[in-house]
Length: 493
Image 1 (tube, rainbow, N blue to C red):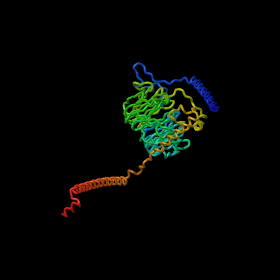
Image 2 (tube, rainbow, N blue to C red; image 1 turned 45 degrees about the horizontal axis):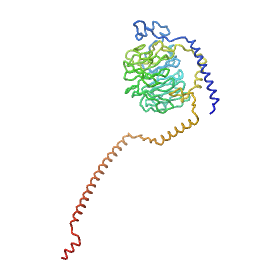
Image 3 (cartoon, rainbow, N blue to C red; image 1 turned 135 degrees about the vertical axis):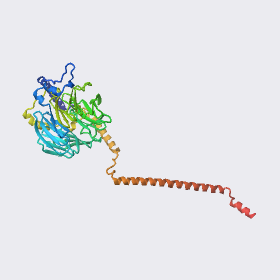
Image 4 (tube, one colour; image 1 turned 30 degrees about the horizontal axis):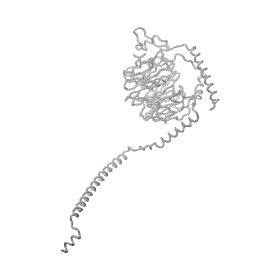
């Protein structure tokens, strides 16, 4: 077989582009000499003992202003940051929604929906955000106006957004996982997990795979291209998985359960590498851009450093919010050393040195206006969401005969499964009271009929045995009776 010249040319061009990208990245490192700074203790001091009030004495005034608390009445609050970390979205369980530029402390919008809110999520930027309300999922703009009502997403519990695919993912109370393309408005996929109400949801930013936590202690991995789970990991046996977080490199996963344990999993081998005991059941976790891990239980949040490399003896930092207020959500602000906490009495922002990216570039006004257009044009298709990202963009070098043979084998296997597949029993309406009573009466009648049949068979067998005995007795008596010729001779004499 001859080589395809077009394919060879594309491969050569791709190699040149990759070399140019690597060269520019190396040059960019020279222009970005900054390094993240962590807290360092001296002598007998420990970083876990440093409080926010002590840190305020040594911080610039701009950073001190970003350490604040908001007392709100409609908690507990779910929070979310935009991808650039400029805007903050707050959603109270009782229906209060507000969006603000949290660095400038300026309110963008605030309104109430007068019904229960379970989760909130920014979409591509601060102009649109999704809210998981009591019955449906709603999309609002930055002025508080309702843009869409997604009636296919019934009783949503968790929301996640894939920015490179323009997909809004919802996990419902019925255990359904739904993918909707917000650029076209079409539902890409609707999957039934068949595992009941989910307890946590997280996305792997490296490959777009969704991780769903369940009540039996398992974590399942989902893709919109498959109707069943890709992987099922039993993380906390017999305990609900309350939170899931995945590192930015996609290699490690952190899970917590109601058994007061926190486990670190290596997703390359799907095995537990570290196991921690927490002081109470942890209900929220998050991982920063530089790999710091935040864990909340009760009114306390702990931040762990180097948790994936080796098992740590104690946390890096610790902080407590108001007494009697439990923390519901925690999220690190992108490109900043701040951690946002949503709890029952409002919102708190604390500083965590070393959590944000130290080197980043600012975007000019013109590229910022055209960014959304370029993102739509470069949107990835849902078919690119795969567990093994290394295979995307590669060439299958198998021969045509091998591909044809594999296709025939797959077709034959599919046909055999189709023939042997049993028809599903229809169970709709089986539990209605009328059908239940009719079914019980029919079962009682069948029992009576069986008992009558058995009694009749016993009686028939008994009569048959008696008749056989009578026939045997008659035959025995006939053997002793005189024959006709002998009777005639006796009469003549």
